[in-house]
Every structure is written in C-alpha cells, then in structure tokens.
Length: 306
Length: 254
Image (cartoon, rainbow over all chains, first blue to last red; front, side):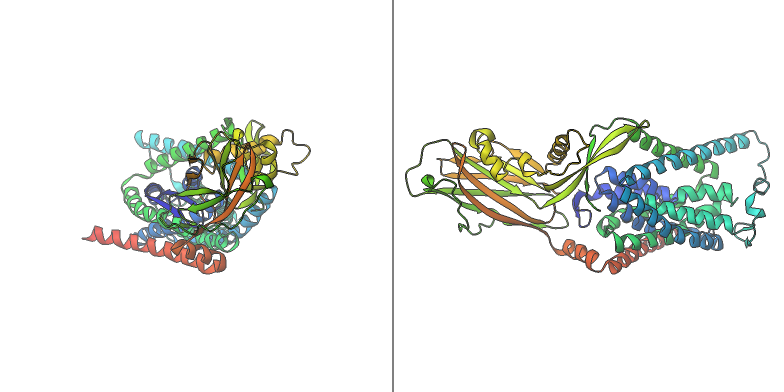
C-alpha cells in the first residue's frame, strides 16, 4: 500500500515503513538506543530527503524511547537524578549542535561530515564494546571472579568537584562528567539526527561506571526530552518534520520497543552488548564503504539555499 | 473521467500561409489531486486538428509537453579526495522543471526543426536552462546532463517518441504517466502542430497539481503554525508511546 508523505513529498510503501519502525523499535527496547543511527541512513536509502529524515526521526525516537522508558520506570531501572543531569547537558548541546549544523550547511559539506562522524564514532565505539564484551564473556567462562566495577573507575569522575550521590546507580561522583556527556550527546543528536544512545550507553558504562541494567532506562529517559526538543527546533526552523512518516514509523517503533524490552530483560548483559557492538560495526562498515567505493552516479541533485 | 472544456484559448501561428490548421484539445483531467494514497497519475490528452481548408502538404507532427514548476537546483559532483568520495564541484542549474514529459507522434528530429526547438525550448535538453556555471569548472555541460539522467531514472523526465496516436491526420491522443513524487504547482501543457518541422499551431493549457484533504491541512499547518505542528507531532509521539506501553502491560498481566 503506497502512501504519500505530505512534507517529504514522496510516495512510499506503508508496510515498509511499519517494518522499519518495528525493527528499529526492537533494537531500541533491547539496547536503550533510540535507533536513529540505524533509521536515519535507512530512510535516506528508501528515498526520503535527508533533511526530512533527520527531523522526522527525532520525532519518532520520542515515541519509541518514551514507550521503552515507561517499561524501565516500572522496573525501577531508571536513575532519574542522573537522567536529569544528562538532560541538562543535552538541551544545551542540542542548541550548540544546531548552530554547528547550520554552519556546516553553509559550507555545503554537511552530508560528508555527518557520514564521517558516523564512521568515526560507530567504528571506535563498536570496536571498544566488542573487545570489552568478548573479554567479559571469556572471564565468565574461565570462572574467575568478575572484577569489581567500582575499582576500575577511580578516575576523573571521583576527583572532580561538585560531587553528587546517585542512589539508583550506587555512585557518588562529580556531576561534571555526566553533564559533559549530556552536552556532547546533545550536539551529536542535533548534527547527526540521532538520539545519541549509542554514544551515551557506552559512556555511562565505561566513563561513569554505571551498572548496565540502569544505563538503558536512564539513557531512554534522557533521549525522550532531547529528541523532543530537537523535533520542535526542526519543525519551527526547517519545516521538515513529516507527521505522516513519523506516525507510520512510530506505530512499528512502539510495538517493537516493547518486544525489545522483554528480550532485553531475559538476555545477559554481555550478550546484549556484543550484539549491539556487532550491529554498530556493520552500520559503520556500510557507511565507510559508501565513502570509499566509487559511486555509480557521481552527480547528485540538491536544493539551493536549503 | 471528466471531459472538460474544449474551448480554444490560444492560437499561435508562426507562418501565415498555414493559418488553416488549429488544435482543439481535451484532457481527461485538468487537476491532479495528491491524496494520502497518491501513487502517481495518468493523464489522457486527446484532441483534433481543425481545418478550414484542404490539408496542406508536408509531414505533420504533433508534440505534447507537460512541464512542472521550475526551480533552481544545485548539481554536485563527487571526486576522490584523500581516499574518499566527496562532493567537490557544484553547478547551479537555474531553471529545471521538476517534471517534464515530451510526447510525439514520430521520431522527434523528424517533426521538429532544431531552430524551432531552440526558439520554443521543447526538447528535454533545451527545457533546462543553465547559465553561470563557474569558469573554473570544466565540462559544465556534464552537470546538466546529470540532471537529465537522474530525473529520467526517476521517471520525472520522459521522452515519449511515437507515443501519440494520430488518426486520419485529424484526431490525436496520448497518455502520460506522472510519477508519485510530484511537486505541487501548475503544470504547463503545450501542444504543438508542425508541418515539415515548423510549428504551425500551438495550444496551451494548465494542469493543476495540488495536495488535498489531510495532506493539504498538514502541509499548511507545518508552514503557517510550525510550533503547533511541532507540538502536535510530539503529543502524538508521546501518546503512541504511552498507549503501546500500557497495552503491552495489560497483555502481560492478563
């Protein structure tokens, strides 16, 4: 069934959109990522104009992360205090990111820089997570004691001032690192059109030393507000939020997120992380190939001044 | 199918001695409504050639063009820099129709002189205007060709040679498919009658392509009240998330 999208001005198959939304929704629930890093390139691929894809994706992530976060709230796996600190940074970051984005757009190279950002971030994070998870599984197999998480993170998070107690996470750390993570993720979400979970989840685990079970819910909590803010920014400045596209994606997305949360609750943290790292590396590889291999069509058409 | 006005609006003669022929046209529709399930449209064009004298000699040609709204576009070319393919050169094509179809009753070059094409900008190549390509860009022609190639692939530009059926040198008809990715606006439709490659009569009309119903409402709202539109999008997203969450919880507890 074809459906005409009023803002994107293209006609696409409704079931394709529902399916894409569902697939990304499952990942969203399982890993606490908004799924934007996967959905945004997929939307380009089916012919949605990039500007519309980025803005609409932000709107769709609001739905899937809200649905996912509710499930986590009920299981009390959300550190609200940490989430609020991250969110404060996130909102500031989103505004900064919008300025950077518009500056790059003026230079005419925004596509390339977005793709390079994807390749670099996904590549680094995917590799780190993959190696970490493999080591963790190996340790578990050889029956040695699991290392004490708190011993590994006696770095900056403990030496910086403005310490705060995060009960749910069992942490007493400075607010500066989580606030900075929030800003960084906010910038990325405005530039790359993603929720930023794929950056935030590893940052929370490896940088802040938060327990894996709390990380997913907390990141979803932050993502709701930052992507909601981004949606409003895009809708009021670029008029690129396509509500019809968003509704189709989010119908699939919210259902998928629920299924994903169930799967996530049953699987072990290491398995979860190794799956996510493989996925991150695959997307990275695909994007890198697009940049490295000579394209069949060297020319592309774009609108002027938009 | 509605048959709309068969009134002759316009008659243009390039040569006085063939004033005896003129075009009468009918359209299956003079409006294309973009609805939620819009999946392209087919427009039937049919008409007759009215003569008040015996048919003149010379090969007769009928050419129909439909041109969507013209907008300037930026054509970018990728080149390999530091091992990766990046957009390197940009050429601005000032006016390229968002949709352009040319239908003929015979091979294009046989029924239209090049000088007439130049004057009336009928062929796809001529319908696209490109001026002001920066001097440092070699081969700026290749950029215009790229526009045509890419849009032909998307069925936005169509050359339909021999697609017009002519009956007894008097009646003609053709069907033109318009793809789903149409831009809103006035689609200027022209019918040319030629003799030995020279245009002897022309008929112009307009097909109105516009969004209707919900599509129209959403589009207008997003432009006129963007904040309300944005908040509405957010509300729908949050509501959907909540419904799904509650629904699944309900299922699990029963």
